[in-house]
Each structure stands twice: as structure tokens, then as C-alpha cells.
Length: 217
Image 1 (cartoon, one colour):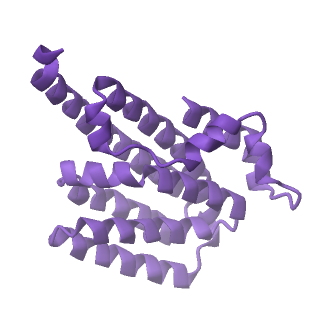
Image 2 (tube, helix red, strand yellow; image 1 turned 120 degrees about the vertical axis):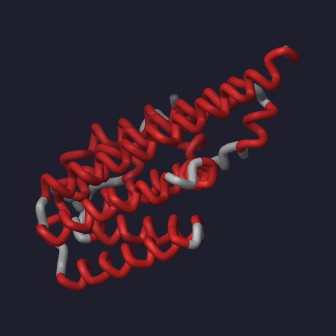
């Protein structure tokens, strides 16, 4: 729950500052009285193999952590998308079109690593248009924290990559219309669908682990 506490403090305490940037904003304020939480974010998290060896508690902890990270991502990325929509340039749209085409090519040959990298650049091309540096820093931090979950989900649930392309196209269409509400809605929906399918995979893994090792406990 340390991750949840820190990230919600970051969002709830500074949402207004993100919309109206304050040059005196100091990221250290986020960490006030949260030294243990800061250390939790800095330390590398255990691998999936370690979690399995620690038993059900390890996987439950990762399920909670994933849910917390993605809940905060939904709110922050929705905000970034709404701010970015009217500020997208023609050059941004050309870049987004190119990245979408390259994502489709990567999906066709099941190159998941390339798809993940292209998807990140696609989304951050949008968020950079918002012109909110602190907001971008928070989103980038959360993407880094959730990177292993995205990779795990995609390799465990490969059909998700093809479904996600329809969502990406809807995001791209909203970008071309420069529609703040449509873009914000689609971005939030996509993040939400990602965590829904991720948690489904994790629950299946937990069920498999319980069935396999239950008799040994």
C-alpha cells in the first residue's frame, strides 16, 4: 500500500499545480513524511519467479500494486490527454500516424518488445503536447513502475495486442479531431482495459499456483 499512498498524495496534492504549473513546485514535497515510501519506489521490485517462491502472498502483493499504479495512471493520463488535445500540432499528428502504422506491423509479426516501445512513444507524443513538465514526470515514473506488468500481460495474453490496436485507432481519431473529451475518455478507457486484462491474467496465475501447490501446504 506504500505505492498507493505515495502516488495518491502526488496526484491529489498537486493536480492543481499540474494544470497551472508553479515554478516553485518542489517534487520533494510529495515525499514529505513518506521516506519509507520513497525507498520502496527506488528499490527494484522482486521478479515474478521470486514472487512465486514466496507463495501466494507475493502474487497478491503484486496484484494490489498493479491495481494501485494503474488507478493513478488512469487519472493522470486522462488529465494529460484533455490538456494535450487542442495543442496537438500537424507534426504531432504525422508522428502519431507513423507510430500507429509501425505498431500494426509489429503486431503482425508478434514483435511484442517493439510494439511496447512504439506504444509508449505514441502515448508520450500525445502527453508532451500538454506542455506540463511535472505531469509528464509523474506519468513517466508510473510507466516505468508498470513496465514489467505490461510485458508480462502481453506475453501471457498475446491476443490483447490486436484488440488494443482498435483502441489506439480510436485515440488517434480523437487526436485528429483535437477533441479533448473524446481523447481523455479513450485514453482512460485504454488504461482501464489494460489493467482489467492484466488482473485477469494474474488471477489465472494465482489459481494455477494454488491448484499446483495447494496440497503441499
